Length: 336
Image 1 (spheres, rainbow, N blue to C red):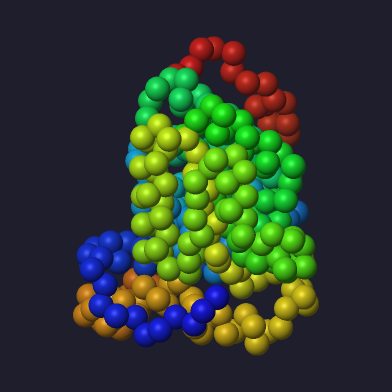
Image 2 (spheres, one colour):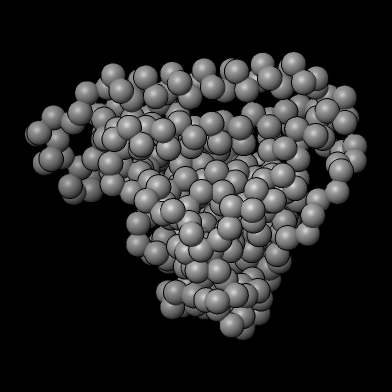
C-alpha cells in the first residue's frame, strides 16, 4: 500500500464523516474489549478480531438499502455492528450467554439476525460464498430488487467453491457482490507466497464478471465502489467483485502471535494508513469537529462497549434444556 498523503478537505458532509467515524470507532473499541475478555477467559473457543479492517464493512454498509443481505466468515463482529446489530447481544454471544444473538450457543462464528438480514459468521473457509449466492438467487427469483454482499478473505479466494460460485452467479445473473477482504496474510501466509495471481478480482474476467480493486483503508473510496457495485447488480447486470485491500493489526485469531510479519510493518500501517485516523484528520482539517469533540465521541463509544461487556457478564449461561432447541427449522411458511 502506498503512503497516504495529508488529507485534503473532503466534499463529504460533516454528518456522513461523523457517522463513519463513530461506526468505525465502535467496531475498534468493541474488538479491543473482546480481546480483553478473551484474555480474561470469558470468551472461549476462537476469536478473530476485525481491528484495522473497519473501513471495509462501514463503507459498504453505507451503500446498502433496507432488505439487502450480508454473509461473511468467522471474522464477523465488525459486520454485525455495522449492519446495526446490538453490541450487547453480540458481546453476550461471544461470552456464551443466553442474552446473545444465538442464545449463547453459537459463539463468535455462529451469530445470525433475521431482522438485520445478517446470515452469519461461518467457520468453514469459503463455505459462505455459495450460500451467499443462494441468498441472491432467492432475491432474483422473488424479483425484489435486493442485493447480497458475500464477504470472504484472500485465503478463501483460492477455494474451489469460490470459482464454482462465480460461474453459476454469472450464468444466472445473480445480484451478488463478492467482497474479497484482502488483508494480505490469510491465516499467516503472505499473498505473494500463497498465490501466483494475487489480483484476485481479475479472476472474475474468466466468467465475464466485472470488478475492481479498492483502497480498503479509505472508507470514502469503499463507499463509492460499493455504490457502483450495487447499481450494477440492481440494474440486472449480474454479479460484481470488489477486492478491498485492507490490513489487520492483530493476528489471524487471538491465539496467533503473528510472527510471520514484523512489528515495524504493522506500526507503519497504523501510522500512515489507519482508516479511522484518516477520517479523524478529514474532520479536523475540514473544521467539522474539534479535538475535544472527537474525544467526547470516543468517551461515548467506550461507554457503549463497557455497557455491552457488563451485560454479557451479567447474562446467565444457557439452560441445559436449550441443548434441544433450535435444532430443526420452523416448518411453517414464512416470508423471506
